[in-house]
Image 1 (tube, helix red, strand yellow):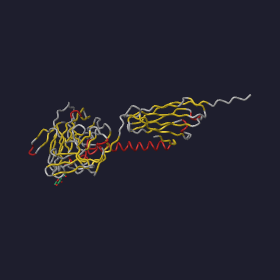
Image 2 (cartoon, protein in one colour):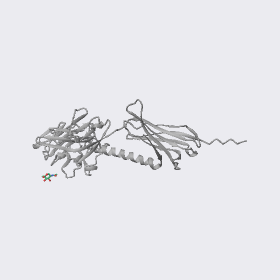
Image 3 (cartoon, rainbow, N blue to C red):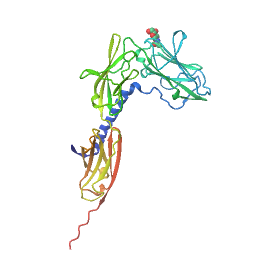
Image 4 (cartoon, rainbow, N blue to C red):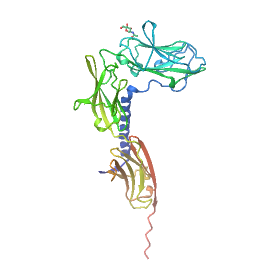
Length: 395
Ligand SMILES: *[C@@H]1O[C@H](CO)[C@@H](O)[C@H](O)[C@H]1NC(C)=O
């Protein structure tokens, strides 16, 4: 397919806008899809200054408990995470624990001081159910009136302090995944009726249907045609702490999917996931530019072509910068996409800049920029314009 279009300034920028919009969309979709397992509020990986005990703790929602003790020079502290049960019993936590929804979760983490991170939904909780306090040798996290929606990962970061400077010891962080089984809600509720998820070639995609109970039996279903999706553990796998992962997305995975959880007499469906497949390039394009001639005489025609050989079905956008641009010289481009002979999965995308009847102002550098969802690359070539040979005087 070949299209000819006038290369006006707005046209290039408009097309760039469209692609930027696409890129932004892609980013938004990615954010949407990854919200469930985004990094806990480790917002400051930098050394964290511990203020003297009187000052108010800074930072969003003050996840760091106000230390009751002044940090003293201390070597690496030994840490352990325990769950405080009723009647003052302690239990060392494993990978996961379950706390009946409605009950209180109390975690104690050795370290002076410690910081905590909590599931994203809980971090936004403002009704005062979550408390963090620091004692001399350990920190305590308390969550009262728990609900199934609190299900997720809780992490304790012991801090390493030198004088008043403390930093998180990431390698000593202790994580525990806490389920809050809720007899009414098998899934951690989502605020959206459906969620759009982008499936990119070669990028694992998570359908974050998080259950509140590790005992729930979870299956994956397609809306149209209705049916259960086979989960073989390789192409598609399930993790009770995460949901389903499509490990190698392919176009046939696209569509509307949802999870179904059953436990006892209860059977519930998750939010709907609208999976959109995007041919995602492995790398930015690698354009090559070539002028029909590196020196042309005034009045002749010039063609500058920019070619990208790349993966099939990956859209490439071209834009040009050329000497006559500033004075508004209207040039034309011809764009085409063709299959590469012999190479089954490759295609050639090309943009040809046409300069009719070259003038002196057309001398200089011609730059082609090729853009795909992975990024942009530019290449240039220089064209010299020669004056028209003076007509020989007739004798
Ligand atoms: C927890 O629930 C009880 C009973 O419903 C209520 O009185 C109390 O205020 C709640 N506490 C918090 C911190 O929300």
